[in-house]
Length: 120
Image 1 (tube, rainbow, N blue to C red):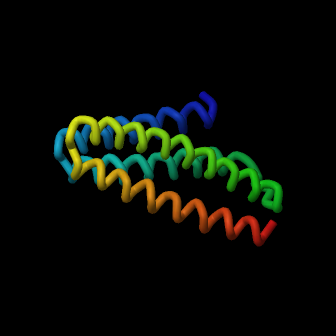
Image 2: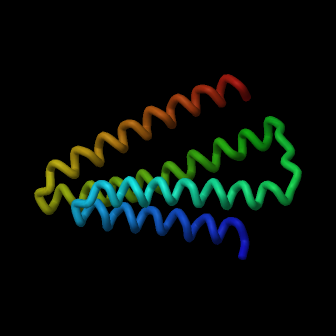
């Protein structure tokens, strides 16, 4: 199986697991799923990167930055859809938490854009 497919399956599993554990009100399960998911993604990355020699230059850094930006856009869309769902069903506490996550992600995105704008 290709790296991108396995990574997509892992990230999808993390998102579904986190959504389930938050809905079920089990915060320890959410932390466990997130921790295990991050470890599995790192292990997958390590395995595939051990097979190839990595070339780093400005172009690869720019591609990585664009990829991170696109990933954040997809995640923001999903979080905003969840926010609208929770808000429409009267779950204001969860909706506010989702807005905080969206705001923090936006700040991180702006900082990374500023950094790569200066570097490139």
